[in-house]
Amino acid sequence: MYTRSGGIRLLAWGEPRRQGVFPHGGWTRLDTLYAGDWDYWFPIPVQLPIHSYMYRDHRGRGQWTDPLIKGHVLQGLVARDGPQRRVYVVTLPPSEDAESPLQPRVVIRLSR
Image 1: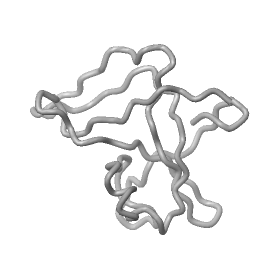
Image 2: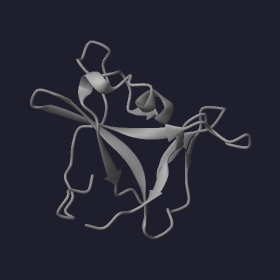
Image 3: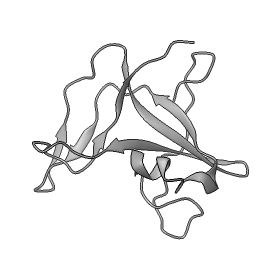
Image 4: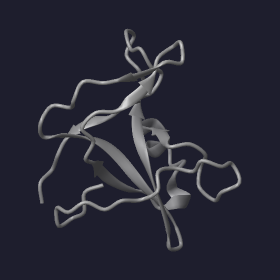
């Protein structure tokens, strides 16, 4: 993720195990943020410096996207529990012609 000063900081992505304190997985839908479902983890919106990403199509095959347009990033959130932090990718409802049920939210990078 980008820091406020413009640097990059690495954090653990999501929660791979169901027994952790954070929500399972590495993605969250934007509507769950608006609904307050993440309030317990004091979410902080972040910009993720991703060049491209892989998704699973409807057949379960991994597919890489084309590179993001210069100046665009994925929106993420940092969930917090005491000193622990996890980053999650924010997703939108997929478009009708989407090949994957997970559609990351792409935003224009805000420079600091």
